[in-house]
Structures are given as C-alpha cells and as structure tokens.
Length: 275
Image 1 (cartoon, rainbow, N blue to C red):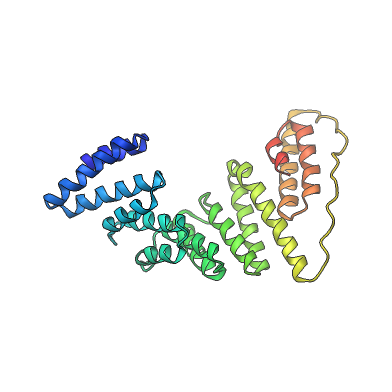
Image 2 (tube, rainbow, N blue to C red):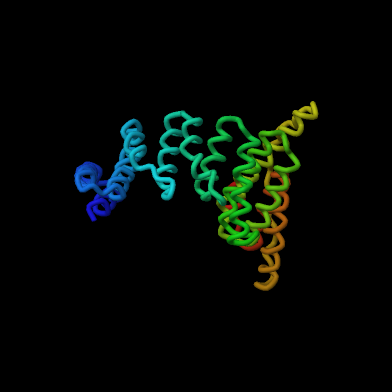
C-alpha cells in the first residue's frame, strides 16, 4: 500500500514526499523480508529519480528492482542507460526481455531506437520489424499503433541505404493513415520530411545533382463548389490527391492541391501548413 501511495505522489509531482514514502516502504520490505515489495519500492524510486534527472541514483535503485518476470524495471533501467549515453548497457538491460518469445513490444521499440542511435541500422530494422509483425498479428494490418513503428523502420531502412524498402514502409504507413483520419495531421508532415530525405539520399547515391529549391507561389483562388454534395466529393478527392503527392515527395504539387482543398471546402488547413 505504501508503494502505491508513493507512486501516486510521484505522478502528482510531489517528489520530496514521494521519495520519503518510498524509501520507508523499501526499508520496511527489507526488514520483513518481502522481496517482491522491496523490488516494487525500488522500481518506484528508480522511476522517481529518473524523472528528476538523478540518473545515478535511478540506476542503483532499478538494479535492485530487476526481475525477468516483470519487464518494467528492465525497461526503466534501459531508458536510464540511454539517457546516460550508454547504449551498450541499455541493450544489455533489455537482453532478458528480447530473449522472450515474443519479446514485449516496449522492449523491441526501445531496442530499435537504441540500435538506430548507434548506427546499427540492420539490427534496428530487425527489432522494429518484429514489433510490426507482433502488432499486425494482434491488432490487424491497419492498426493506428503501427505508425511510429513504420516511421522508425522507414528511417532505419533509408539510413541503411535500403531505399526501396524504406519507400515500402512509407506506402504502408500511408495506407494506415488513410484508415484513420485523426492520424493525418500528426504523421503526414513527418513522412513528407522522410520522403524528402530519401529523395536526396537516392540522388546523392546516383551521383546526381540535387535539384535547386524553387520558391512556391499559391495558385489563384477557385470559385466555391456550387452545392454541399459536390463540396464533399471535392474534399475527398482533393485530400486523397494532396496526400498522394506529398507521400511521393512532390511538395509543391501537394501544396497546390491543398490550397484548392482549403478554397473549395474550408478544410485541410492543418495539412497545408505542413507543406
């Protein structure tokens, strides 16, 4: 109970009170002895220290909390090691979780991010790809939760020089985004920027000169749609066309179509702002 109280205090940002509560809970559990309660208190303390940037104290507390049957401590310790700039130690903390079948999704995600930061792009693709496979099996091929994984995969594949694979991940992400309208404002600009990087990397790999950046001018205003039914048709067609141009990396064309979308229907300003 004391651990739950201290953890609630931590979430409420009452860090000093939470630390005192959790330290007392850990000491009481050690005297009992109650190993599970002691590990729970150590985990809560480690999270508190990590949240307050006391990374050394967080590491020591989380080491006391390690339990292969409960992945939270391993994940928290790996996150602390990453913040300390120790990617090898982070992966070592994740190793017991990555050995499970299937590995926990948070462990695969963190391992992929750490490997990407190390420049181990193929390993990042392996771990992120496993996560996509598990998510697809559990939630379906168009699950909204796939978006950050596909973005990470496309980045890793592009960095590894696997441009065709990266474009495949972008295409799949576009299909997921079309299935969830709420994803479009958040993810469309990120994938557009990724497409631009892929185009530049492909040009450099071929030894081609990069195209000069040209100033973009908005097209002249269009007359409003004559009725609401036509406006709805215009909105769907123009939105699909704009997103198609954007995911292909043709941002001026995407912006022109987006401007038409705004002028015809009054919608699409968020998309247009990203281009």
